[in-house]
Length: 347
Image (cartoon, rainbow, N blue to C red; front, side, top):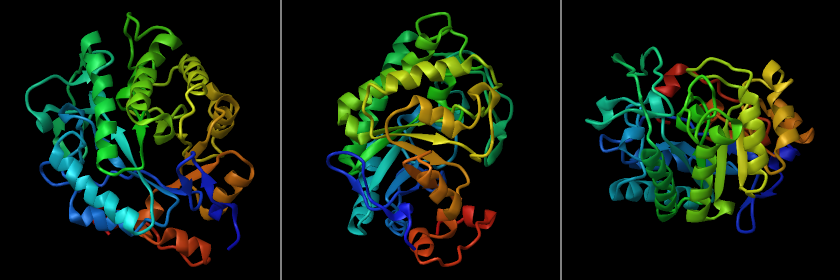
């Protein structure tokens, strides 16, 4: 199959992707009890190494970042060593892999990290219970102090350094889907009255400080950022949020990142607060390499790239069902359909 999907893309001066299909980050909760990646995980990622770039499952930067069971970390030597097995396996199979750096903010639970506060921009909790652990209800978080925010920024940078030590080709900062960085970007979750709240500039400050610290730690060409301006996970919409993303994206244009990765759900969906489709909004405001994710089929992915809505497309659940997804699409073979049973198994 001749397609723009299989054209290489030079991501930066040192990293050229073999094709434009990324494996999206897929939380599988398969690390061991010390949050160390396992040999089975190494085999899992290596089987998918023919993607242009793998974005690892979301990986927590420190203990209080955890909100789901058995999610891997990048803050102990054992975790770094575990990830080395994964990156070595991927590289030996000819692939490339970035680590997604994660703090869940108010979605965290002390069950996972013992004593200590759940941190968020503001002391605004969410309803519900922890996935896979329905007996654990979410707690009202503590509004992070300025000192705690500075420490969070430093811990993102240290996790990025740890990722490079572990052999990753770069990192993607998780700034989307209702987790910590995204919470600072939305009025429903951020009601601070200091330099991290109230205005688009202030509400973007934490995200930009994290980006700048990670860039300083590992280099701009090794850093991507995940955003979701069209999505509201665990928070209510607010039309003012668009002004925050307008400001944030303008600032990101000056950073020369490897890419910005944005969730679209369905590129036919239109969002009033964004003035239409997410892809149109992002392409108009962000000038760098843009990755789209959200229910792409091979045909819709091809169309999105051909129309220059995105430079790269990320594929999620189909990669669970089809470890050889790239080969199947290239050879026009039928794809296995994803099922919930597959999600429960590491295949």
